[in-house]
Length: 369
Length: 176
Image 1 (spheres, rainbow over the protein chains, first blue to last red):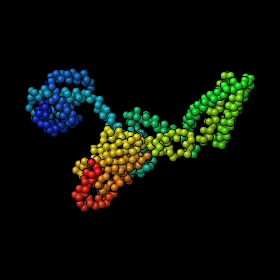
Image 2: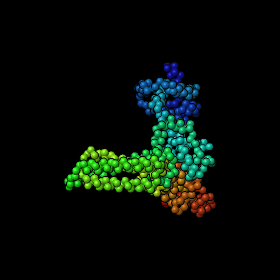
Image 3: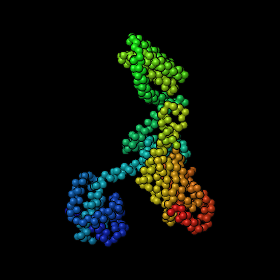
Image 4: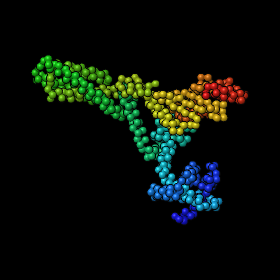
């Protein structure tokens, strides 16, 4: 370490000396120093800042010690830092013969060197972030300005999201959005697997969110297609099955809400009726079982309809209408009947729920087909 | 323009005949995202002597300013522009109109611009930042061979000094 310092001392002194004599940035460092500094990855600004820091430091001895201890604690023992230090030394050696060593300058230069090292240490993870930003910029699609999702590369070598490139080819003609070269048919674009895998490795989070969005968009699109019969016929079998479950979920939720509402209204009805008249509980039980029986019949009907193949839309409409009528009648009878004990009510509600669910499923199926 | 409305109608079962709106809904949200991205990029790294931001709540309607580049008769003038993004941006060019009067052969009295990249040469890889830079470049290099105001173009070709004089006069009058 002592030998190193001695070796470095002379050429280090050049900087503060020069800074004193000249204010000009260009004159601050010799061209050779600059060129090698550039090779070592130093930019001019950092060098200037470093030299300014040296000049501004009031108590050199003290700060030197402090900085040194800091750098000792902060420096991770990695090879890159050693490499940096080596690179740092080489440029300084170059101008050795040109400079006259000075006692005063020696101290300052030591200081400067340490400050620079210190800065490098504190910025140790900054280059990584900067690098990521650069990569992000490099790997983003010029059309959506997002990270390329399923990148497709044009014959001229530019990459875009497959979807973006396709839309661009559809709407803006068959030219590369970047260089305007003819790119043939944008329809037949393929995913650049290497690039796509790289992107997935580098930006897993972004890719994941994009995937989720894409899946969501696809699903809602399918749901919509399912709802409109004309477009639904165009969708493939697999999408139909997937959407059916989705739609069913929606329907079931709506159904549950409706059932709850109706049950409440029925409860109110029965309450009011209960005060008016009281009938015999057996009769009510009979009515309930009759209703259940009907429910079974209907479910069988639905099932047979399904087994038969795809029921026509008219059939479904008729079925829905019938179910609704039944429901209405049931509700009416329920209100004309009376308190109905809890044991019969619960299976009754269940049967109704099942019935409705099956009916709606049948209807949806009919629409989808 | 239906930004939020389209999506809600598509999810409700009543919108059966709205097959066309679905497509536009996706593109609107995609273009909205891209415009938002451009906005943040413009904030982070604006092109020299230019600025642009949405006018109000509507992301698709921006206002931009360009400061006349030094060394031109437009020097020091602040020129306001209106930018309207189409719903299928970036696949269609934005509509850019000068709101400040300018004596320029490529800008007509209504503020319309004749700039190839805003018409046939538009590419989805272009951004507002690049468009503003291009507009700024026609300040210093007018194109008198594809003019919107032929009188100005003729004067520019015949007597550039006179042209510059009038242009700086207009800049003083309208853009300062």
